[in-house]
Image (cartoon, rainbow, N blue to C red; front, side, top):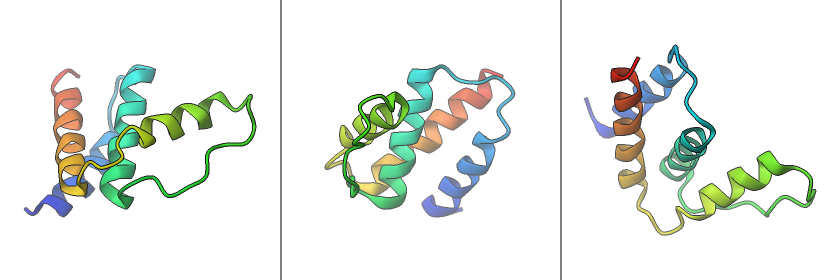
Length: 87
């Protein structure tokens, strides 16, 4: 199975986790997924200063800037596998 297929499988597996990961882990997964799927951040920062979730997601993805897509995909796969093993 190629990296893209493993990435897609990890995405599907992420929806089947029985224990909800911590907020920090969820942000890490979000940023790795977005970086792996789309590459460097390509959206404007949230304008609503009270939308803390959007601001956190934006910040997490922004920190991934420069990380190659393939590296982000592999880290996402590894993190999902780690979470599955902890279930």
